[in-house]
Length: 111
Length: 114
Image 1 (cartoon, rainbow over the protein chains, first blue to last red):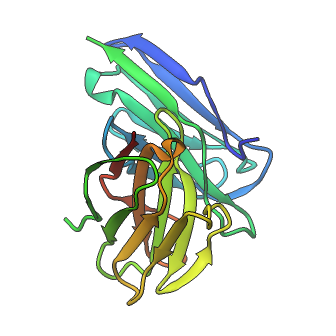
Image 2: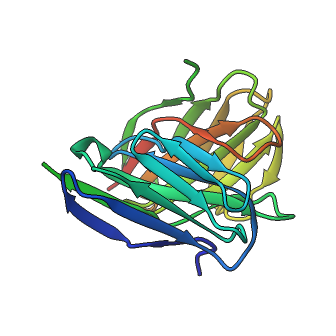
């Protein structure tokens, strides 16, 4: 059983559409990170969310941390082909230093 | 911009052979991680170092895998003997100690065992 459950597993949309990726857990996290990984490359850190209810924006990407710090979402507005990749959430539960990754959401944006 | 270096980028080896991967973390990053990633899945932690000490190797198959970070800087991950099921991407990451576990990854080594 994954500590962090990501959904959907796959997402294929047309350029210009919006999309949302979810990361859920039954555990409370001190922080969560979101990464994007392109084929054949290592994951690249996008953002860290720390405070319950926090919303962070990175250009067309909006990240939200749930009030209870058990879940997070990533919303992309007007997706572009360059947004294609594997989106991973990661975090360590409170009082546990072990970092866990979700299984990821594969996003494909068609031109 | 500082980056995590890994080599080789690609490795093809026959089963039962030995293989080694090298990682040089970002300067000043005391924490170093080795992950294994199956295509389309999230990375799975194999071993975590704090300086030269192993913090967590609970998921490392110790009968065939070994990892070292002798001087607390660069690190080597070895597999001997390699098995077909070891084919995967091997990722190295580093981070500053403490903080919010923000990790910086290298480009990875794609291992194919034939």
